[in-house]
Image 1 (spheres, one colour):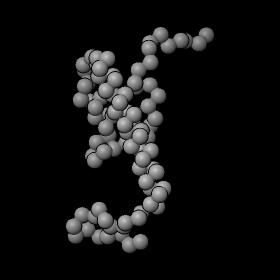
Image 2 (cartoon, rainbow, N blue to C red; image 1 turned 30 degrees about the horizontal axis):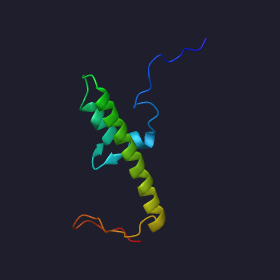
Image 3 (cartoon, one colour; image 1 turned 90 degrees about the vertical axis):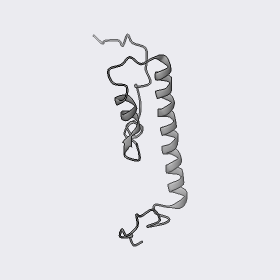
Length: 90
């Protein structure tokens, strides 16, 4: 016998791992957003907001990939290195 899901789909279903694990700066955006709302009921507006975050992150990853493909792997080595840090040789 197969169990049927009786709950409506949520924005948490089917989030690709590359999106849910993506970082902006030091934060995993999806996990941070959820942790900030731990132990509280999420409203419909909250769920819509989370879904828009997931969509924005997915699109950002697509754009990063397209830019990397157009420019190559490391088009400007050392450009974003911190001052006095060793610059990687191409």
